Length: 227
Image 1: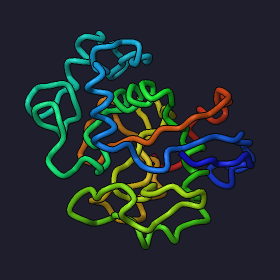
Image 2: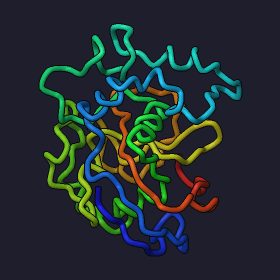
Image 3: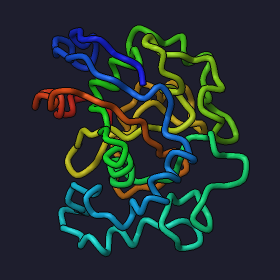
Image 4: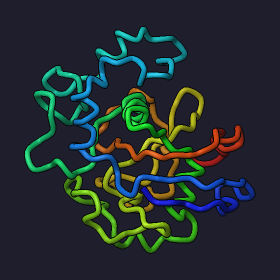
């Protein structure tokens, strides 16, 4: 992980004070997510702390967990088969995970999803657009984490491109995906892509954080703007 030191946020919106926090240097990889799966993460409800809600209606836990299956019907990301990832992709970022799976994976690791304000701060949104020139956009798929030279101001890799990363912030019953994906244009780096938390797309991934204080309500609120 990398340390992101305390400082007022510089964008979207300004004036919010962010205490020190840590953020994963890389996106969670397939091999790391496999540890969660192999440890029974899909069976142990202690990692699934958030209520499952779709279209304003509660979804039973068993029904929700049963929907998080790979292409062969086993527990795991939508991009996997037979309970594991494709050959030679161990160090690629995990993809095809819902917001709930991303949250549970971070919980298993003793971490949490970042708020979008923490994510923006670490990514240097608004002042560090140079990383867009050296990131995985408009390509044919994911790349091993750290393959591209687009490094954020505090040493994070792939915050632009590769896979989009879930944040903890809610927009109604949706959650924000950040950073843009490998199959998108690089201007999507700035977007707050509000999506159904059950979405398991080819570009939905995860990066975890550690914050030593519960984020203030202002940080858990999604600011107005594009979504």
